[in-house]
Length: 554
Ligand code: F6P
Image 1 (spheres, helix red, strand yellow):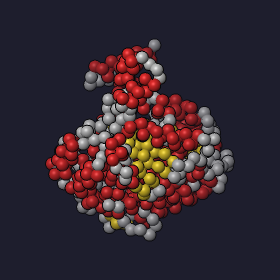
Image 2 (tube, rainbow, N blue to C red; image 1 turned 180 degrees about the vertical axis):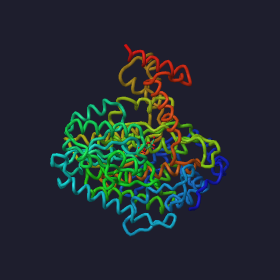
Image 3 (cartoon, rainbow, N blue to C red; image 1 turned 90 degrees about the vertical axis):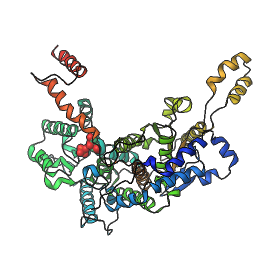
Image 4 (cartoon, rainbow, N blue to C red; image 1 turned 90 degrees about the horizontal axis):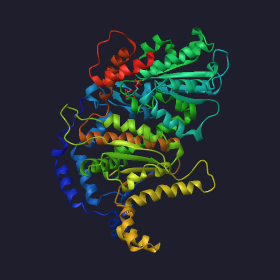
């Protein structure tokens, strides 16, 4: 397996230096003026791919900006990097492995050889295993300990073993099959378990312990709590196999927990947690929408993979989104990026993209261990519109930071209520319009005068009414949210994140930063619960431990 390596410090590339100069030239760029002077701007800065339409005309870019950004991608070795990703080269150098989530979407009959082994038959063997399980549960053939069919499925998992499946299963609820309800148990907070278990009956509940490593504290504690609850409700050890299955690459640990080997769905070390919803980690998705819809999801993602592989960078959706992010993050000082879905079913996409983007690109050293010389991944935040308009959009419109935003909206609603969907769509468009147009001082003054205010009042109020505008956004329109388009949408962001990691020369597929908190957590737990423990490393943590212990004693 060849080792993938990023060429150079990106800031030394000539295209980077051109972009630096170009940024200066763009200081006074006005989107308002660009639209006025260029009747083709919308056509030239929009594209369709895989059932998604992207309008990126409301950005602080000219054709020259796009050309320079594309040159940067080429100079940074993006073509080779994309090929390396899909071929299974070692793009995750610090963990010594490839990142082959794209293999999970490859059709039956394709070949992908890594170290002499064709991975595709194994991928499809597991899809077949999933099909059998889903069929048995949907047909009422998988029975609990009282011989009643399963009605509720609880996915116990956290991070990538939770956020992706939750996003997709809830986004595709209009495609739900009758029969089973899926719930998610992620946090170690006992209240989550308490509230959820109160809704369930052990005899008709199946738990999926979803953990690639089968060593994640939160998941193991919740699995243990679920098991105790199941036994307390009348289940027995001998019937445990009817109520607990697992998805994991650590078969040994899952068997030790008490799960039968034939009920353990494999995961592979070449799939990262936050890229794993396409694998058996997607079981709750398949149980919600059925296996044929799950396969549609995979094929939607596959079409995006093909687009990413084949489209020229100038019209390559993930590449363009990534380069726009680099433009704002590295040349305009933007530190965050808002994800604003205008659809109830997509309400969890921001959370999924937070993990996808921030766990992937929240890095400060490059693949070779040298420090980065630029800022890397932004803070991803946001939430569903219109709710956000009445909460945090104020900061987008008049706050001091520059925050690029992605609006995501479907044309068709599955639940038309009078004209609500027209209003929702109108709000989405008018937000990006307002961000771009803003309101000038002259416009603000004219508006106030038209209301009959005295000149003193006009002058006092006008500064508060000015909205700077010229704030960038992308709008992604889907005809509807269906398995294929959602698959393409999620894959679009996966590839966007990868492209940015290549530009910055970082590893998008490890996550060493989360380890330290896990390690220290053990010591803090011992100090909270044990005696004769050494003092914590710092006085603040020790003080907070003492506070907790003092209250618990009382
Ligand atoms: O701690 C972070 C993390 O490792 C994520 O990358 C991962 O998605 C999550 O924990 C859960 O891991 P696992 O599936 O191994 O339980």
